Amino acid sequence: MKTTKIIKAILYIIIGLTIIFIHAHFVQYLKYYISSIMIMYGFFEILINAIEDKEFYKKYPPYFGIIEIFIGLIMIFKINNYEDVCVIWAIWSIFRESFQIQEIFEKKIKLLPAILMAVETLVVLSFSTMMLIEPGEHQARFHAYLLVIELLLSGGLLLFESYLLKEKKEKKEN
Image (cartoon, rainbow, N blue to C red; front, side, top):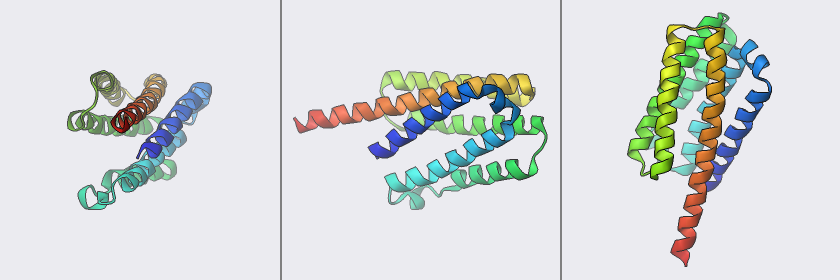
């Protein structure tokens, strides 16, 4: 479990930093990058949850991960309108953040990471709603910056959580 979280955290940080360096290219080819990120999230959701919990498929069928992969593939092959890509990205962000809100309340997360996750979730929800209302390059560019912050924050929180778990385990052993 700890290893998968560390791998996920490192990949999120790498993707976030990559978007910073290719920002202009990212917005220009938004449909390919967002669909790739959606597909990656879907695979991660299915793979990591299956690895972490052997009874995963009985409790949580991998519907959302499969839907993310499916929508990502549809976006690559069937959607050509920039505004449609922005709308799909906004709706997907709203769904992902709603799951994050659920995660904050279901898991017993330390206070500081929970506050950071809640603030990040509220910011992403508000800007996703703005992009849903007014899709376009300006909103997409701003949302790309937000995606970078979200990926870096999520990766950092996962690493922090892994560190806390390691520290807690060492205290129990002593």
